[in-house]
Image (cartoon, rainbow, N blue to C red; front, side, top):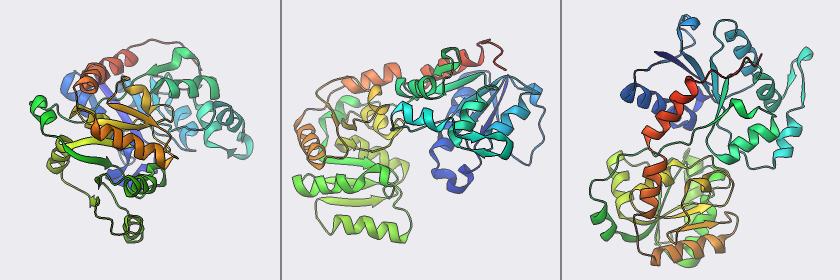
Length: 342
């Protein structure tokens, strides 16, 4: 069976570092390697017979979504959407924004476009209970159209977890687009300065100006190491060695890097914003903190560095967030008859 994957247009700007793109590529690999589905990545320059597809799945959205889905609907009504919304505001604020639109003069907000597009969309994918609440409470989407499909961890399972747990080193790891405000790296650095724990920072440091900004935050402090981009092999070694992984983001959808770290037995410090924390089992190897509070971040990491690393989070994530589990949820959605929503 054939499925079409389509990504929102602005994703071309950030290219390989775009998280929406990464999710779509991963789902394509899972579908093609573990099922009979074949996935076409739709190219704007290509020519396609839209009636051939079991499902047309759109990742991300922008102001063009409404005109696009209303056109596709004429040829194929099996349209699904993964909006991938990292929402942090109260539901009522998004609901208010969804009324902001006047189609006659093309004065449209993205929330209005998303709500109007639901007339043509058979199913919308939610990554968490919080995101499901956004769809139902802010956009008034019917529960029959919401499919909760939690993301899977993105890394191969280690074969020697017991040995890894015994060889952990006393440092905290963080992986992200380090220059982005929402990743909250400045407060993480300030907590390392204040509490003196060893911190290793991995990921995209941005342009030259942004890289210098991060270095300025660190200000030569010896217990903080800015590694920047590392290879996949190097990243695995860091996951193996890190005693703690911290993700104190102020805006985050899921935080796959933290799931990956937990797979390697890291103790996890996680932001308290809705969504990401749903993925974790309550255990003494997990700390949920206010990302705006340097003291909470520092206290949490310092406490976790003193805790033994265990299999609890590893086992929980393997059981609930594997690629097989994700595949089951996707196929179930594609094979749901649903109702005629138009």
